[in-house]
Length: 107
Image (cartoon, rainbow, N blue to C red; front, side):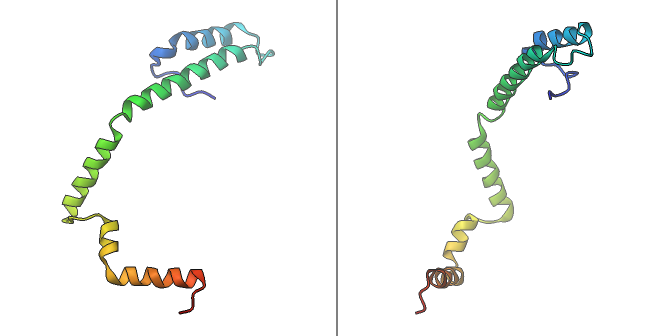
């Protein structure tokens, strides 16, 4: 199943027109008659989606780092949550006890 073809798909307009023409000219009793055209459209839409995602996600690491920094400033924290947990003596002690219990050490 393909997405709605009402929005513009500039990369795939030829395939969309071919599918619409096939639907208009092929008998409804021959429901498999447009499969090849539809497969071509599906392939084109998949390639278009990959191209658009690459454009949208090209600076994702930079954006994610900037968001993390803004979040840390908003929360008034200078360290990440993982650094905070590793500095918490009670948490570290509880994790060591859990590891010993899970490993079968009864010391």
